[in-house]
Image 1 (spheres, protein in one colour):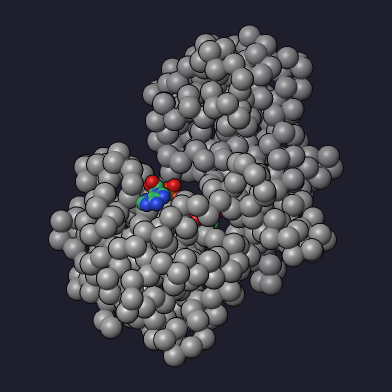
Image 2: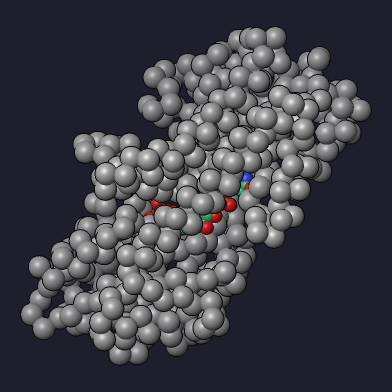
Length: 464
Ligand code: NAD
Ligand code: UGA
């Protein structure tokens, strides 16, 4: 079989960009991205894409209507495709067994059932979503129990490693593409088909193939290792604050060791994003279910340290502001979980802000990409606050950072947006209450010049 038509179920942060790049790099393949969400599909077909990713607009503009299509017509998408990516969300379960830890596979399962019900010819089904180890086994089971006679399926694991904000760059130049498949002749052939899709723009040495379970576990392992690095440097940042060491210097010295490497050692207010926490908890749950409590505890500690880091930072704000923020005005710079994305899922900003709101602070919030409604939704969510009306009265969302700072007691930086480096902090200082504080939760501003202006400057991993 030569892949001529691809369907991707799930037009989210992964499905959208991944399929746009496949369509761009494989003009001989028709790519159909389908989703149950009418709003999302409408946005993908409009000039305002549902997600912000540098360079993505240009790619979509070039391919949309040519060999890239977005629709809600899931049946047609499945029926016509030779290869189907399942790229739906796999959130942490919020109920029942494994609540708060296990991955909820209901969306993946419903895709498998739909594929079995619709497919009238052979398909390669690819797990793109991040799933627990051996999830492919359930997909195979569902497909084979429900398939039409004569239709055959091969299930592959092809986890995605893109990071938000750099999705296009990561998809064009990945460190590796990982494909897992069954160790049978049919399995190997299916793997080769997917390899041939990626080979349109990725060299063979970067396309790794292995057995399905190794591939599934490698994805969880990669995110766990990355999150562990952030928690490790954040643990060091606490030591730095207590000892007079500077965490940037420590990170530089440690990272110079080529065995350790310099990436992912930026101390921060904590990691956020839709996946690190979810995938770590998933790993912890798997280890517990396999009766490996020491392994579970080891990875649990990575997320515990993350919670500790953002709590520690918030306590520091309170302490510095003379142990009360009630009725004080605080300016929040950045609400996204990292720069160059409008995504706020698990953003440390949600936790820091809700803690400050609980203490009665008024927050003037500015983020260059997060839409105001999203900030309000995040801070009034039932899991965050049980008094949404009170919260609405305590927050104001601004589109101009200078306006957001006026009359405030402190600036709290929670996302490392480049534009925060360019501001006229002297002008901001002049419009603030004194003493004017700045809390740099990303340790990336020019602290010497802020101190010179007169700011009381506090950051992660260094005491001034
Ligand atoms: P997302 O929530 O942005 O998108 C998922 C989409 O799937 C939604 O639009 C939803 O409407 C759709 N959907 C759900 N069930 C469906 C169904 N039955 N039929 C059709 N559409 C359906 O999620 P995401 O961020 O793209 O993540 C998808 C998966 O990829 C997750 O498993 C995640 O862990 C993994 N992942 C995410 C990233 C990332 O940067 N966000 C990176 C690597 C891997
Ligand atoms: C992460 C991984 O980097 C991707 O490889 C993976 O595909 C993805 O998760 C996923 O599975 O969803 P992402 O969450 O988009 O990507 O962003 P990262 O760049 O990894 O940042 C995650 C969080 O860690 C952010 O809040 C970031 O600010 C924080 N971080 C990162 C630090 O605090 N310090 C660092 O040195 C690096």
